[in-house]
Structures are given as structure tokens and as C-alpha cells.
Image (cartoon, rainbow, N blue to C red; front, side, top):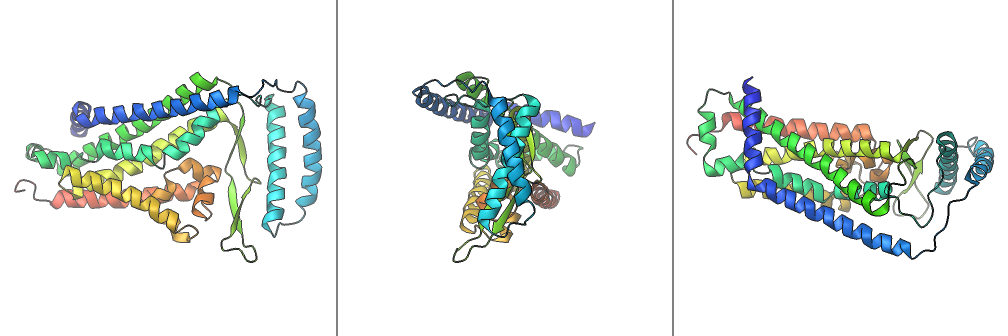
Length: 355
């Protein structure tokens, strides 16, 4: 019951903070930028002559499926030893899976002059997860403890008959809950804008998940060549995949909020704690980009902020090393647990009353 009261108190303080208004304003600006980009892209697509989708797409899909399956049965007998052979095999696997999905779910291709708002939103969210959304989370919770340390109001809390770990746990729960809610709602704000501008088509279009990436060493090449493999891939409707992506974004932002929260405990200044959290994210991105291809890059938390990219294979192409969703979740979990342990240890031993 004491923890619940702490959470209620911290949530009310969060709602009244000016930082929340700043975060909301920045989020609205981000949504507006996305809307402007989508409107501009739609104008470009509108210049393309209207082309109706093929009425006999089912017959074409059946013929393409039969041809692709025949070629695939020949290639699957040989294990690919080069990037070119693996790419040819992957292309056939993707064709077969797409044709089977379209025929099973009666989903025809979208007209070439129409934008797919679901795909546009998914791509933008994937990019925003690595840049804008983590920074918004840091601004929101970067001074959760340091702000009260700076103002001196933290002393009024620690003298109450509430254990320090309960107080800190309540603050952390509010931090991660607000960060997850912010990122989840922001994803759907992007989707609402895209569907309003581009139209509702595309919800049932195929999306590939659980894509494994294999790296092939080419003679004379400086770096291995990545090839996406679809032998274990699953095909989902885009609306279903977007729900999963939004949930994974919220989960990744829990780790970001935990890092910002730890900085808020370790550094008693609100400005310093926020700057330290932002700096750790920016430096993490820079190091991951500079050390592309190194196996230890997978241990950085910034590598896995796009957990959906881990699942869809995009992260492996970015970092130049095989990555799975399970690895990404494990890395973020380890970072969260270790940093929270440091925060609780620091807060429990800190002489707050005499600071």
C-alpha cells in the first residue's frame, strides 16, 4: 500500500512538471514533421498516372508460386557457399512465402501509385526509435531524482516513514510507465497521421519477421556481405506487425528510462544528469557506427533500441553482425538490472539530509 501511495504521489508530480509540457510539445513537432513529409511524398506519388491493380493477380500469383517452388526445390538441395547463391535462394524463399500468404489471405498487391501508410509508419518509427524517441524519454525522466535533489525537496521525502528503496522504486515505476506510454502513444500518433494522409490501404500487406542474417566473406572484400535468409521467417499482416513493433518500442524505452533514471540518482544536478543520459545515448550510437562489424557492438544498449529491427533483420545489416531478438532483449535487460542496482545502492548510502 505504501508503494502505491508513492507511485500516486510521483505520478501527480510528473503531470505537474514543466518538462512534461516540453516533451508533449516536442512530440507534436515530431508528428508534424512526419505529416509534412508524408504530404510531400503523396504529392510526388500523385503525379504518377493512376494504375489499377491487376484483376487477375491470383492467377499470376499461382503461376509465380509454381515456378518459384520448382526453382527453390533445386536450390535447396545445395547449401549456399557464396553471397550470390544465398541471395538467389533468399529471393526465391521470399517469393514463395509472399505468394502463399497472398493466396491464403486473399490479399492483392497495392496499386503502384498508392502509398502504404502502414509501411511508411513502420519505417519512420524504426528510425525514430534510434534518435528522437530516446531523447524525449531522457528529457521526460532525466531529472526524476536529481531535480528534487537540486530543489532540496528530496529531504522532505526521506524523513517520512517510507523506506528509501520503496521511494526509489516508486519513482522508477513512474519513470518507466510514463516512458512506455509516451513511446506507445507516439507510434499510434504517427500511424494516425499516415492513414489520414495516405489512406487505410496496406493493413493486410505481408511483413516478414524472424529474418536471420548470414554473413559471407568475399575474396578481396574488406567486410563480410550480409544476406537475409527467410528459411525460418514468418509472414504477418502489417497491422499485426505494427502492434508488435509498438510494444517492442515501449519495451526498449523502459531500458532508456532506466538509464536516465540511474543518471538522475548518480548525479545530483538536474542539468548534469540529463546531459549524462543524452551523452550516453549519443556516444553509444557513434561508437556502434564506428565499430561496425565488431562482435562486441552487440553488447551496447544503443544497438538494440530498435528491437523490431532485431526481429526483422535490419539491425544485423546496420551493425554488421548477426543479431536476434532474444539477444537484444537480454542485452537491454542486463543493462537495466545492473544500472538499477547501482542506483539503489547509491541512493541507499547517500547522505541526503546533509547535502
